[in-house]
Image 1 (cartoon, rainbow, N blue to C red):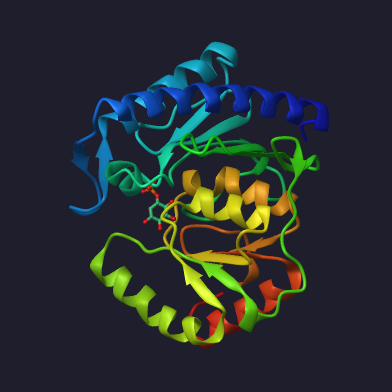
Image 2 (cartoon, rainbow, N blue to C red):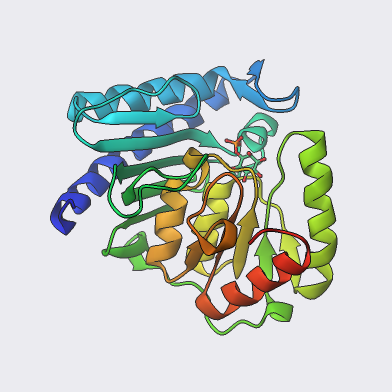
Length: 279
Ligand code: LIP
């Protein structure tokens, strides 16, 4: 296992790369943005800025750490030999980015392959996340964490809201792109919405998890995420005191992610199970 000092060094590198990538994406957006291609559905879009920003992030990572691996949303996996993988979403909240809604993020996580946490399933982290950065380039808010080092933003320690009962909870969620998945997610929402304070759909898992860590949300759940959506934000939320789980209380993956302070997490898992989710 990598030492805390090494995790702190990885975090410092991820922080600097995220700042440079965020400035690049923000500047590029100022010149206009258009859809370069679609992926799983006609509404699952990618822009040239997504691709160019990921290319910049990849080059900065490999310049600094040429033997590391990279798993990114917009390009093929780069296989490394160091045992460390960088898990990158250059623009999380792509639709918000496309529409000019100021809620999108550069998300960069670093995970150590293997170990007890290795098995997480599709859309999960193959190993243990050591460092994570989530930057909203529009607001400038950067949230970050290293394993065991706590979570912070602008030097302020982050902590989830504790002691919030389910019926008082502000809960964020999100929806996939495929019609059948969205219909099922809406059915689950019918069981959740009447039982909580309210729902927020921000459009970026990374920003949802950073907001949870900062106490601007009480809980977050979503189904259908990719590893790059939640790698960094999941560590930030955990280091801020959240319990983060996936299906049947295991590790989060593409099937499910549930995150909240301990007491609320248990209540939300029970509610999701009543709504038919294998939480
Ligand atoms: C987004 C996720 C978000 C989800 C959106 C989308 P992308 O990732 O961060 O939580 O609800 O549908 O998948 O596609 O913008 O990188």
